[in-house]
Length: 264
Image (cartoon, rainbow, N blue to C red; front, side):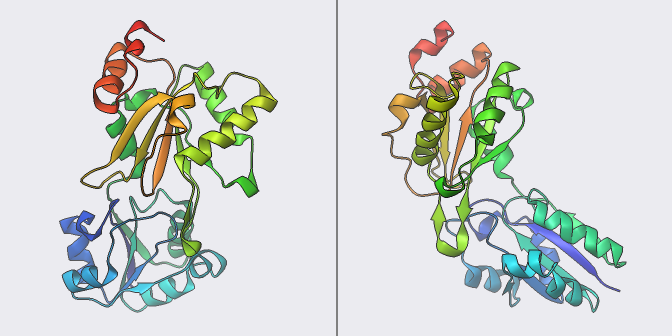
């Protein structure tokens, strides 16, 4: 019986893979990659294949979820299979399920971690990691849910920040933008009226984390609606109570309003 090695690719392009991840890939019998859980804007599979000297098979959501990763599990029974995953491999629950299935079948699994959007966005914002509450995903308008609004409200009540991941449909090359997410939350605010997302609510938008030139901008929703964050992927943070150092970081690093120093 062989093994499955989950290898994180990082956030932006093939250069984000670690040296350990590269070595695991080079010594694999089969190499797979999934690209539906997150967008890596400048990834080239051809360049990655040249770097690791391996042919890479792209697997779909259907193959990993609906078919329970059968193609990867079958390969792992006959040798070492590597599955390349954007970000950190086990952030996506899809891959936790695959690892569980492998263990039940007696297939050994290992993990080579990569840079995660969770830590990258928080780091770029200058906010303190230990002050974040539950993370939430904001879906596209046609699958509107009040869950993101309620999660933000609950975190704010506890003084905690909220990281909002924005929905993607990779097969359709469709990615929810910061501006669209804010507009939906404003509409929910009109119905719920809890003061969670108003024109005077402070937010932080981050685009293309992991690239050489990410966009990081903090401001009030009313002003942020017209800010151009550029190409995806985008993420959004709703700050809770700010430590004075966090307020200073948002002003200096993310162009937040100077009035934050007065505790707005």
